[in-house]
Every structure is written in structure tokens, then in C-alpha cells.
Length: 139
Image (tube, rainbow, N blue to C red):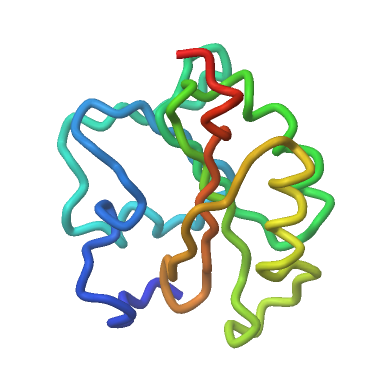
């Protein structure tokens, strides 16, 4: 389902922090993901190349095992001031999942990230935004 439910008047690209010139990777995103944006900058570089440093990685998962497998590798793929978004199905979506906000937060924290924001992606997905703690950045 790709409903742009009116969770907020804030456009999705702004909520997620997508800016002009950013390098972005999505993992397991729903097929309609980019249809959710009315405000995506034209010069966003979408890549699947794990050797390129990204500004944003947005990972979708409906189970704990997927996040546990993917999140540890994000640190070497992200710029020091970059962000990762970890998204899971909302309970109200009807998608069977062993994830919720607390489980996702725990996976991020266990891997050295700190969560700073939560948002609704659409009527199926929620997301938690994580960054590298300032004390651990080497900028």
C-alpha cells in the first residue's frame, strides 16, 4: 500500500533529511518508495554500491534477523555525518513482524548508533533515524 496518509504536513524528503547532492542507498524498500516523494531533489544519487560512502541509508525490514544482519555493515558505508533510517511495519499495517520501535532502537544502539528521530514513512512503515554519536565521529 502506498498511501500518502496525512501524518504530517512536512514533505517526506524533508522529514528524512534528503538534500540536494546526497548519495542515498535504499535496502528492501517497497517498490513504490520513490512515489511517496513530492519533494525529492533532482540531483539525489541513488546507489547500491557498498564501496561508495553515503549520506543516507534507508533500510526496510519486517524481521529482526534482517536488521541484525545488515546494520553492522552500515558504519563503513556511511559518511561520518550521515544517517541511517531503519524502518519496520507498523502494528496497524497488518504485516506480520517481530519488530517494533523498541526492538529497532535496541539493534541500532547495540551497533553504536544513537536514535534521534522517529517518523511515519507511510501508512505501512515507521522509521527511526540514527546517527553516529558526535564523540565517535572523526570529522
